[in-house]
Image (cartoon, rainbow, N blue to C red; front, side, top):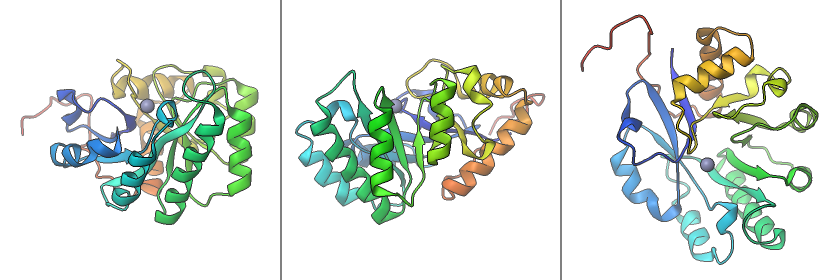
Amino acid sequence: MEFYDVHTHQIFIEDSDDPYHSCIFDVYPLEFEVAKESYSRHAFSCGIHPWYSEESDNQMAYLSEIASNPRIIAIGETGLDRLKGPSFDLQIPVFKKHIELSEKLSKPVIIHCVKAWEELIRVRREVKPTQPWIIHGYRSKPELTEQLVKEGFLFSIGDNINVDSMQMIPLDSLFCETDEGEMPIRQVYLQTSRALNMNIEEFAERVAGNVRRIFPTLQPPKPYYPDEEEAED
Ligand SMILES: [Zn+2]
């Protein structure tokens, strides 16, 4: 099995260099230079979190400069949050700047969305993006899931899962992540595969296929075989 963690902030945890998974580390524009030297095997998403969209002009300008770097394989996390951060008047323009970059550079977007689904769908319909939009940490209810699937979103699932929504998400629209959680990526895969009534090998193979399609430059990890003793390098 190959495990991919498409959204994690756990960049300073030693275990991130576990050879059995490949990560997309979420970094702030100003963190990228240092991070890219430290984690040569992994890749990055880079953006400004909606909580901090106020007075983000300098970070945004710097992001525009570095975003073409091939190690940055996604733009974000960016998005909309009704519960935290400045008003949507400030969040939406910053979100749209990320989308412009994504379209210009042909890189997918990693989306953070909290209680702002209407606004998110409105922006998507307005800009009609060509790039994949992946909603990270997805755990919303089935009715909304059905709508988001129709609108063309992709989904990344973390430790907190809405089992009832899982069956509605097409298998070619799914990814897994650890975000800031404690649950290791293998456990996230196991939990998600169980919610789908699939065995983990089969599920991991589908997710790996999605990663190869959406993030073709992300290096595969060392394949993991649960029965085999982990040999030393
Ligand atoms: Zn995150």
